[in-house]
Length: 459
Image (cartoon, rainbow, N blue to C red; front, side):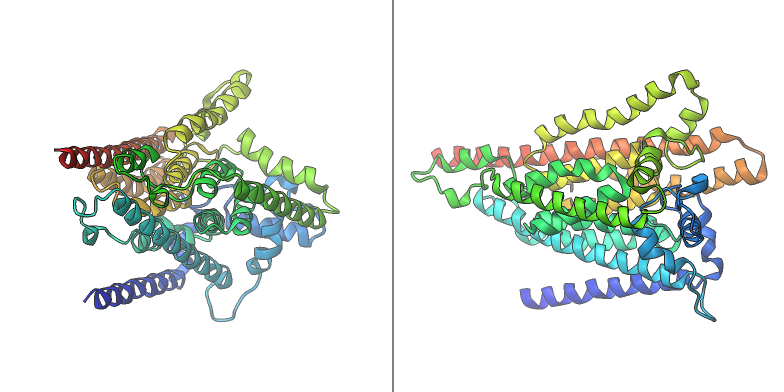
């Protein structure tokens, strides 16, 4: 019966995967792709397809791809994806090949999320068995977090819009997910490669090195180690096999070696690509420098563009430091509190820098909302879930309306559009806070169940 149930679930999962691919292809063939590539919620100065095409045209014209302040992405993307911006298939939609690459990237990301989620699911069940809480928490009621997370990622409207809207976000998300999958499966070279590529493309994923270190050094998410000690010290023999593994430095050293190796390899390729166009310094100034200085103040779903459009130039550098350091201030406290949950820590980090980064897009939200499915069992009692769902739907509908009233109708102003961005930021804050609270409450629930079981055994 269980085998039949697993086969049915697997069959249903692949049906949904195929349906998501078909749905994307239908939207790609829709006339003009609904003009999503020009939406500020989808396309940013770093993820814009038009800017990628402009950078490739400049390079083909023997000019620097960073000339004219249009392109601010990686030179490797120009070499890999640039040719797809000019190739046409007669009788087919424009940029069909590039759209197919985005679809493939989404499917690969979903499969990696599923594989990592299955590892997390197995670790979760094993931790319950080790704490002898299988009877208190029915294993049959535990959802397959890998399947849930993969389907959330594939069917999330933000993921679909980023894919159909000719954004480079699917490629960046795939690099981040590749890093986390490599760390979850203990494939150190793969984790290092994903981390280097993700950092090279977007800079902000650099802070994911902390959860990756915890994953490689301690293993997958589990309840606090003291729960296992409390449970097994009551027995005559302390079963070391049932305890979470202690921290190991060996995989961390391997990760540092591979990260250095991949970084040198990427820098060499970038140097060769930009040999006649200013070299690596030109790349750092036009990519990372562009991100850190927030030079482009075109509207997006973030909050920095409006703030720096209003602030006096005399205070600009001060507030640049404040906004960027604000992300760094959160790293250490969260790492200390959630060190036993490295995958959830990675989700929190991604949600934070998706909210506070210079040029956010819906593709960033698609990533952390997909990873949220990994913790469908632990966060089952999270508060304000329906409120958050309605809030995301409302912002998704109101943001294009407010932008149209401001830019095209002329009946509104920038405050209309910025109001939706503020609500969007507040929703993300609530999601992070309530998610972290629900995870800690879940750990407390396990601790209480363990304590009650020990007291019953004594009596």
